[in-house]
Image 1 (cartoon, one colour):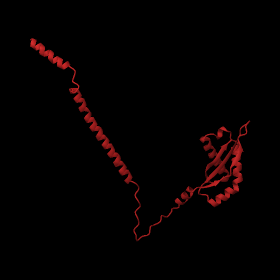
Image 2 (cartoon, helix red, strand yellow):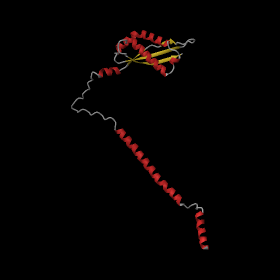
Image 3 (tube, helix red, strand yellow):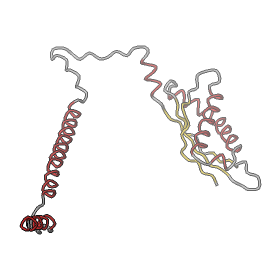
Image 4 (cartoon, helix red, strand yellow):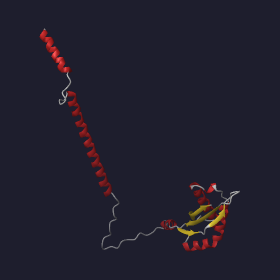
Length: 200
């Protein structure tokens, strides 16, 4: 009986004794083994992602538009004949530009002398021939300058600030010019481009 108590105490002492610095406990061995599968999984995911990216780039580069087949050598290439509907559309896309001389006008600011200097370019529709349009605009230039001066004189300092106001000014000038130049027809001024807009 005494021997049994001594054996039991010896087993308890071995179980309670701290582990030696170089020895691995079973829990530490399991901890090291659980990292290995996760490392392998992460490596497989990275390789698969890289392969997918590489294949995507490879196929994206080769899926560009294919070149038109060349005509047989014994036949001349056939030119595309423009249809009637494509001619006006092509002419409408060919805009041309007309520069107006700079205009200076006093702003509508009581108690202070403020003025605006504006230089504009008209973007004309390709439906109006350049030579005819230039002749018309040269003839109507005094009218356009007058309209622009009166319009600018009606603005105050706040209505000239910011991009929204400038876009509104462009739109209103374009509408005014179209109404005066083409009262019964289609408006042929597509837009107003601002070369200079200085407020002092």
